[in-house]
Each structure stands twice: as C-alpha cells, then as structure tokens.
Length: 448
Image: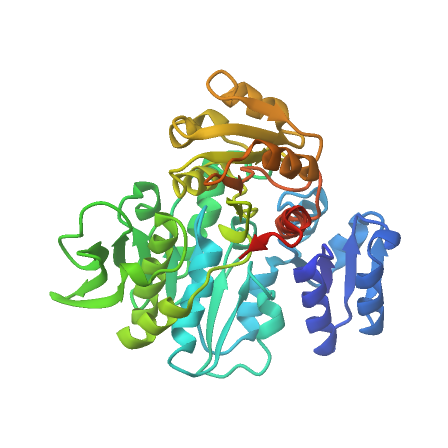
C-alpha cells in the first residue's frame, strides 16, 4: 500500500497499516532532511520511504493509495494511479473502514473546531467512549483501534478530507455554513462546496443532517438524511429545530420544546461561537446527550486554542489570537465580536476572497489594519481606501506596532483571513508565535 504525504495524517495512516501487517511505502516531495522526525518514526515501523519527489511507477503499481489531506486530489501521480485502476482514498475513509461505533461529522467553512470540541464535551459529560479527532487533534486513523459498537467518534471533516471518501457515513452530519475558502486548492467555489457536501453522500433516512436554516447552499446539498435545522441568529424557528429565544438555547422536536443551555452560560467571545455551541447541542441531543449534560458541558467549555483565544491584557489592551480565522468570512465574524476600538493583524498567504468584504465589520471602530505576509498588497488594495493599512515585515513587528498604537480599552486581534504557509508551518505555529510575542511584550504586566 502507498501513503502519500507525511504530515500528521499520512504518518498515522502508514503506522496503522504497518501494524496491520501491510507492506507500506510512504512518499513525500520533501527531502529526508526536512522530515527527520517522520523518517525515524516510519523506519522504526518498517515503512519503506520514497522522499524528495514522487515516483509515478510506485503509484501505478500500488494495491491502493491513501492520501493525506494536504495532498492535492488532482496530483498527476494520483490521476495515473486511478487510470491504472488503483483505489485512491482519503485517510478518514481508511479510518472509517476500520472503526467500530457511530460517527458524528462536523464540516463548514467556519466554526468546525469549536463545534467539534463542544460536541465531544457534551457527549463525554454523559460518560462512555467518546473519541474526538479528524481535522482537529488526532487524525481519525490514530483513534480507531480498540473501538467498539458503543464508541462514538466526533470528527471534524475538511473539504480536503471529504473529497476522498467513498463509504464514510456519519450518523449525524453537522454542516455549519458555506462561504468561499481554499480557492488556492479547489478550482472554484462550486468545487469547494461540492467537496464539503460529500459529508451527506452516504447518509440514509436513518441518519441526521444538522444544518443552518439560513444557508440555502448548505440545505440544497442534503441527501436522504432527516434534517434538523438550527438558526444561530435572528428570529426563532417556527417549526422543529434549534434556536435562541428569551436568553436560552432551545430545541423543538415534534412540537415539544426543551431548553439546552442558558445563553449567558457561554464563556466564549462572539455571537458566532454561541451559534456553534447551539449546533453542537442539537447534534448532541440526537446522539443521546441529556439537556443536563449539555448545559454542564457549556458551562465548562473554554473554547479551542487559536479560536478567539484571549492571550493577555497588557496595560489595558486585550490581545486575542484567532489564527484559525484563515478566510475572509472567519475574519469578519471575529471582528464583529469586538465592537470597541480595534487593531487588526491581517494577512499571510492569500487563498481567495475579497478583503473589502471586511469593511462593514471594521469601518466604524478600527484604528489600524496591520498587514503581514504575501497578501499585504491585496489587503491594502481591498481596505486601504477606507482604513489606514500599514505593512509590517513580520508578525513580531506587527505585535510591536500594535502595542505602540493601542490605547487602554482597545483590542488587538490576530484574524489573518489567510493561510499561514508563507511564514509558518500551519495556523497553530502562527498562533503560538503571536502568543509568544504578546507574552514577550507583557513581561510581568499581564493578566489572562
């Protein structure tokens, strides 16, 4: 078997297959010198390595090919494998075939990680074997061993993972929202949306689709599953579904309404994160969690690292890390969470979208936009006519400049609306770097 791409999911898949007795080859375009830790792990597992490039013949002669999410699905070598009749599948498809139990999958452009983590917490509050992974935390293949029919898997599923599924079937699929993203990888918005919509592909009338009633592009992609709608903002739903009303998160099913949690119990900044908890709570009820379990989990939930994470308050200025806001819509929602004076750090590697769409969320209270990375010019082009946009040579320089500009009561927000790959390995490394700079700035004069 051939495993393509030696990021976390690829390494985990190769190790899993080797433990099962398969003859495994793992390939990556990076040279061995850039993959020292991965090489040591895989050689210890008995995996043969082909590094520094891909060999087309290896793809054509493999019994099957397992693809890490970071690998483009239209890679020429993968096309050659398909043409030769070789099965090509995503890591989560491999994992689904190996696991026992039921699966809940969470997808969408924004809010996947928060919803996935919250759903896991709600289910764990009731006890039992609940495992959380996928695009968050551990790869799904890393957590399947030892599962039983009583196990529940809560899986964050990205478009990159979903485009490679064949039999993957979540009993509950949560599709939060849909807006342009990853257009540096997908050829069009429709292709991106279609990949996301595959979360419903294998569902039957025995399964559930938890979907945002105000997202028509999501609703039209639901297949045969039963629909449970939710509405995160605006008027309550008239029929069945989850919604906010009178300060409470409520769920109505078959004419019966129950309270899931109090809105003021949510400890997260931003209305969109409360909406993520609402969607998680609706899914949790479908999976058997009680309202008491859900309320307990919400009261103790402190969010996900790199998602509107309060880093510190330094000399009266609050610093927030939303490094996971890697698209324009995510950055817009982040900015809306802070109605007071704002300094926004924006930029990185451009992956699609129009920065001008941020203007309504920024125009009346943003002191400065500090632009970093390859997208500096696009940021200035999109926002510079209406807002002061200042380029910064690095994230460190941006934090230092923000500290110079900020006044007590201001918020400094990292919400890049871009990927991190021009300057960092991933969004997590970028978020950690931001937090380190804030703590460096703070010295002994900070509080969390």
